[in-house]
Length: 399
Image (tube, rainbow, N blue to C red):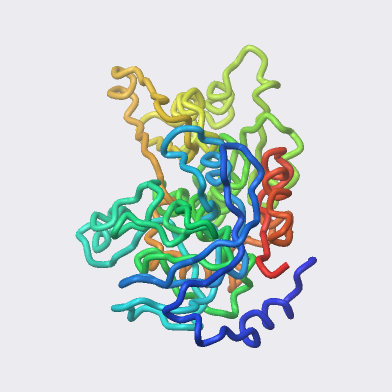
């Protein structure tokens, strides 16, 4: 492990901020994306102080998610440049704006892209994790006033990403996107629950409601698919079928509870769904599409058992992609199809439960961290993910 525990303790306890930074702009380094698909440029930027209901956070470490790569490559809106990407992170509150009561300077926090105001009808409901006061969007601004807190040294605005923008030494986040956590939790594990790992675990736990003894089929064994497997294992599924075109993934997939593996190239003249229906004597109780391909949604739906099968869509296809289902089959088969944004989790209610279960050694987060690099090597993290060589690469800001 290149970044041992003592580094974390030093960061949290001994590194003090100058009191003059509160209420003042901060000059710091950020990895700025200035064009679609171009290497990120580490440059000095100016981060404005937090406004009302906002906090400014010093990032300890951040991890790279596929969503960062998707929007990094995007040439048209909602792709915007220049932009500071990043949304899986952990940090320390440097200062707070007016009307902040949930956190104070020095608190350890996770920024989470799904708003959780705790006051609207949706946030108060157990049926949804959508916030009606602050609807999730991928626009490039702060949520309340649609302005930016970032500028470069020439005064040019730099756009935000998913309300977080963690590829910066400092960032400003609205309080509805901030969760205070126990500082004893290892930061390189806690940051994973900002997005991808929580999404997969939550999809099995909260969206699907996987039951003990059930059968699960997962299309795509990247980090999201493996997180679904971990969530299904945690919920007591006895058979977890992983589908992927890379047979080598089965070794790590077993660590997350995958019991069976299907390589679509080895199915002969049968579809994957036909194979799953045959091997489960009627279909999986729950299926998850974790790649982001509309055709796979059809296969996942077809692999579900008639009468009660649920298909959960987690993968993000290109804008404008559509899913077409036979209306008669939908009526007669009695299956469910639904999407799962952030796994159906309410950040301020459910993420603390996941963190506790990790600390109690009930959840496996350690195996998701396959690489760790310093901030100056952030483009290496993109290369690793693009080549399929990493699940999560943690980027340490002070190295």
